[in-house]
Figure 1: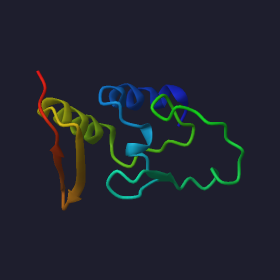
Figure 2: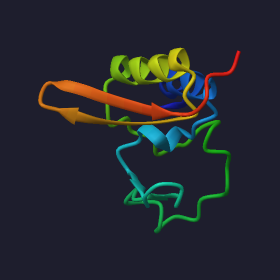
Figure 3: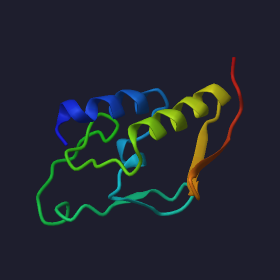
Figure 4: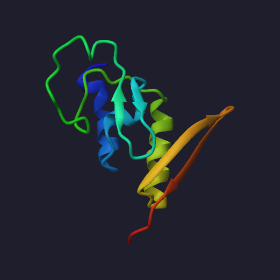
Length: 103
């Protein structure tokens, strides 16, 4: 996926200050507030300079369709959540969040 193809994801994620790897199929979460780990097969074999993952990542591959990602971000924004989690439940996508609504 080139930079132009990643741009819609980057723009959506900026709304919440979430990292691009939040929706990457190569991301492995280390649990609540314990960080993330990239599992891209090339990452550990190439010398990759540090970069701002919110801005862009050459290895990004979405793990959900863009419409689902837009829904997750939209619901999180609409509810005023600071954090959210989601999972597939049969043919449905479940999302729950936490945080204060600020006006």
